[in-house]
Image (cartoon, rainbow, N blue to C red; front, side):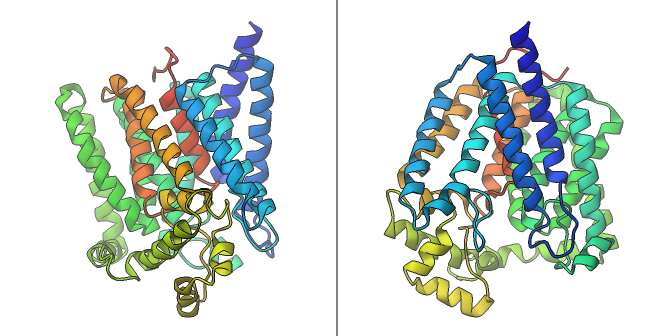
Length: 415
């Protein structure tokens, strides 16, 4: 009975964390980062409490994926100790650098993954509460798209849609996972009112103006066509696509074809021979690869990419700085970034970890099941991560979803 109570408490903490974390900001003028300054301690405290409950539960049952993940953690720890700035690498933050994604934050992510794998459960009540709160954030992002937001004017932030997530690219990666999760929830429950959720998240994705995530959605939609062989879900499947089309036509019309114009730029941005393709990502990828070449085995250390570019007097980084006035601290490709800051061996272990989970769960794929829904949401995140970065506003949701996907719990159903 005690074990059941602890497991239930872990389940509640995890659902509460992924529900409220994206929502948290500190709207006080003068704070350098109103978005992550509050999210970081909430993530730390919640993960610490979950870790305490796991120790109290007393049973450590690592699967093969957890063991591989521990190997990845060890490699990142070694990379942190050999980093240009070890303290920054370990903590993920200093007075002048860091996005709170050092070794300690990775440790928190792993705690969330393991806890979700062992103790988290999906029920209509939990999912509905989670989605309703996230839908409020999506609605906020759509309002920003139409220039309705006194927060932007008050704090003098760059105009755009980022809601409480903090950046339009991060909003897109968050919305992408949510729209697929919400779509699966609607198709499982088949209640017409639930169709509003994928429509709202799709609207937030469009509002983000993030082409990499749009491409990722296209990839996942193509993959999902396979599941049309399940005739009982075809109507709800096409209802979701229909809601996406309606949202696109409405937002595009009201914005005077702003979204349509944005989509037309995708072709030019895919020219990798142009260093400024992908909003300068091609150049960032090249300078990040320079660091991989300099530090192939242990990397520059978590959160130390900017320092490595500075210390090695990287010419591409200098060119980028002169033309844009900005410095680079992330590779804008999550896999390349891992290689640059933690080393190629760490990247290979991370990729192996992801593959192990997908191979183990392949037998459980059936469209409409929680496994298939999570598989598509995770696939979308991984595809968009080729153009994006990991941040604490979104990454905890990815790791919790990954833990749920890896779960062998027999109660893993949407009921």
